Image (cartoon, rainbow, N blue to C red):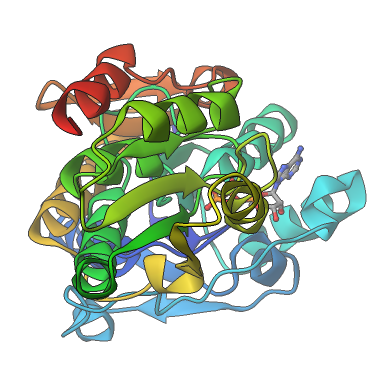
Length: 325
Ligand code: ATP
């Protein structure tokens, strides 16, 4: 096994708070071990076009607390082609990069798996996505910050919901997964949670509203964007039609969920897996995502990290039903 001399680091897919803390950890750990680091801008797209340059300890100063990613991120159709990946590999060779750490979600690791089959370059992934939808880690970098941002927003909405005695239907991110809606719904004291993993959500919601306390001043319903009815506006329309007496409002939280200062949890997670990524490369590991499971560093092959849908905990739904009495 050739000794690693220059690690390329990049962020890819949707940005997530804590990505900067992960970049910092990778850069500082590599330098600690006397290995050079190359920062690749704009994910796979920048890799294809040779947008990369050396990083030193100062290039990651004062970023641990910042949201977004200093390396920028992008979605790249070019990397999905054989020719695009060849261009990317040639750029890595040209810049002396002989190992990679990519921070992103399932798309990023799918690309990494294919690239690893075509080219002999050690590649380690770090879970950076607000979705928390990867196998092989209890939490992904960005998820904790995102759910705290949601809670902060819902608490504010509840003030107005309470004052005006309104029913608020609040949509949060989650095209395929209800993990954000489920956790924030419990923490916000929601009446009901509508997620893609469950069926007949509208019927269940009506049932819930029928059985719930009629004298409650405010009601909060959390909806994941990929829910079967098609989102909060459609649910709001149906609720208004059935319950014209309720003062029903819809709020879509949108991109505020991606931004902001990373929470302590996300910074620590990013720092731990960032250090572990470089140490894994030095130990000869490749083709794996590094996560933390039950507080231990774990290594999951890319194909397993992306393969399965992360199941929701059915107890969480039961908790909502009990507690929204
Ligand atoms: P998030 O979960 O935040 O959306 P992600 O990593 O899943 O992050 P994607 O846009 O799905 O984000 O993937 C990032 C990039 O990975 C894509 O823009 C593309 O360049 C690359 N990629 C995804 N799928 C493939 C594939 N099948 N082959 C090669 N590259 C791929």
